[in-house]
Image (cartoon, rainbow, N blue to C red; front, side, top):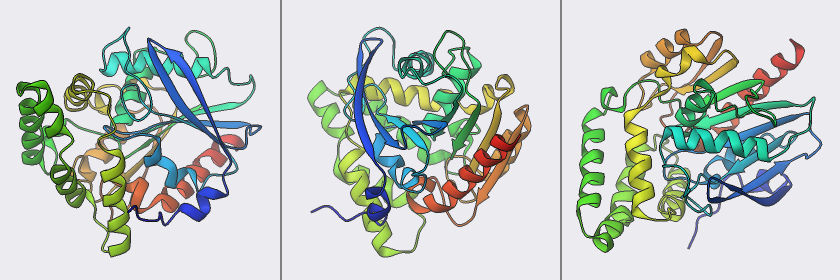
Length: 310
């Protein structure tokens, strides 16, 4: 039995429409939330092994805006790409074409938001010139928001030993026969251990809901090849290698207990961008979107308001 989301009531007040686009061989499913006539559109990119559900707690707090949240190709309800690999370059091309395919109205603001692995996808797409702004080749967004940004190589994080264990886990999943490897990747015990390690809240009911979310959605990937390609991309790149080539106003929403990127690395990451603001949320780790979505949304709303006044 699923656990009721603590953000369900707020999310029910946000209108949602569903759609799909064909991009690089992927049928990309997306969810279009909020006010379709809003002057500001946020395009959301979720993290590794997640899908659009993960960012819904943040979406629930921003109902006055328009928010478009796709499932990355090969995850959730989106089929894999057949015309590009599932690496940072491939996902970067996909993101640029996805935003262009939305045919967003001229004159409105477009904001790209990436969480965790999504922060690398967004940063890589913009730094490599894939566009990802309004329709048209080379289009750029008006601003960028990165939540729990991956600010340094994963092996250098405070729990680098766990990253090495993860590398071994995915190596083993690749080495085993297809059926056994696929089963290992979806093993519920391993998923639960991961969830328990990342959740920092002491609220028992919130922890139960977080674990339930991971149980329901963390294994929603299409096949072994996709998840292995994406994992290799997630540990081979980080936002710091792209930051200097992103001129747009950027908001970094970081956590002081993030096990993947320590807060010192996030302060360093801020200095690599031409113009970036860093907001640090206390007493939370890599699950800002689950544990402190209200605080994150407040920071995003203020950042967008300041940009509108500029």
